[in-house]
Amino acid sequence: MKSTGIIRKIDELGRVVIPIELRHKLGIDVKDPVEIYVKGTSIVLKKFEPNCVFCGNTKNLTEYKDKLICDKCIEKLSDINK
Image (cartoon, rainbow, N blue to C red; front, top):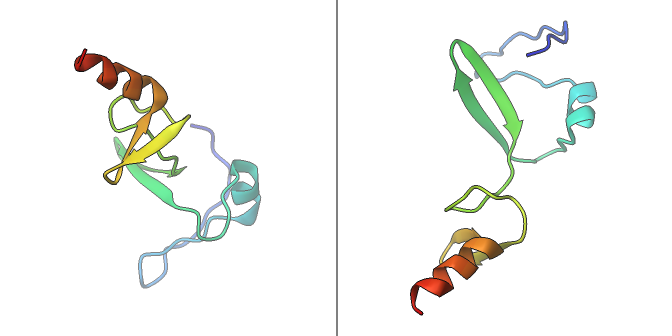
């Protein structure tokens, strides 16, 4: 991980402001969903990207019964019935 040298305090409600420079650099806009991970003793924030429930792919997704499935996995699932 690379340090930015930016330090922010957590407010009374547990919130921290992500500086606009970082949001612009990472393509995070107002109301964009952000995932929170724990890596050892670090907290990692990542812009949320929807992905396939089976393989994790983020491209060519189709929603089926509130689940996202990529084209490749749909093709593999259709082969099961043959």
